[in-house]
Image 1 (cartoon, rainbow, N blue to C red):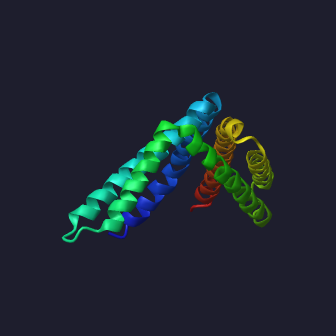
Image 2: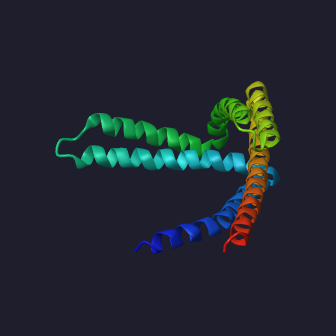
Image 3: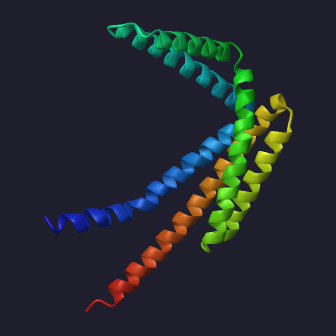
Length: 192
């Protein structure tokens, strides 16, 4: 049994760079799609919000009636949630407009967090500083822009940030796998 665990660990370490590269490529692909179709990305978010709220509202109504004693507050809140979800489905732009401001705030917080990380790590500092700067600019633009115009900005900026994050992950993965290969070669060269 003792030989199985090191073998699993070696297989996991051997395959980790490959999976990280696949993950990075998927992030880059999503970023490119958001850049190509910014309005579609924005509208799809509004539609998903609507679908989620309608489904949650229906579940709350069912749960309210499913109890032995009908829970009126669950039924009432479920109806209100389903109505809000229906409004979001009918006018997805209004749902997305509210999210644009939240996305702007998120970009600002993510940029600050990335700045703190860049000053803590020496590895990849220029990339981390660049990504932090892009996120801070994106947050500022989204909070200052006209909400309807900002929907296209939000999807484009999200796409740009996803592409930058994916490229950063690819660089880190390649550098790590190169360093690991060199360490393994060094270790096997000194074996008796």
